[in-house]
Image (tube, rainbow, N blue to C red; front, side):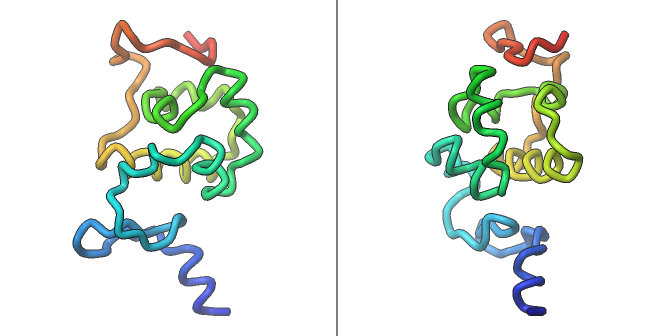
Length: 117
């Protein structure tokens, strides 16, 4: 049981040679490879599949859409605090360590899909 508990809560991401770790488990692929997953697969791996339909209804149909979404816009989806932190953590890893865009630095091409000002 202790071994399972260690693996489940390992979010240190200190593996050498760009080996991703954490909730998605050890992976030898680059963190940006999450964009090859469908939105449903990505959310399922994070135990957030229940939000798939909400994201799709708002026009977020792939992981790329999540990567472009400002952090503030996630509030419209009513994720619990720890769920939001987990999602932001894995999205930041997929961006190569870059934080989520903020509403104030969106480009002209970005669309506010959640209706927040």
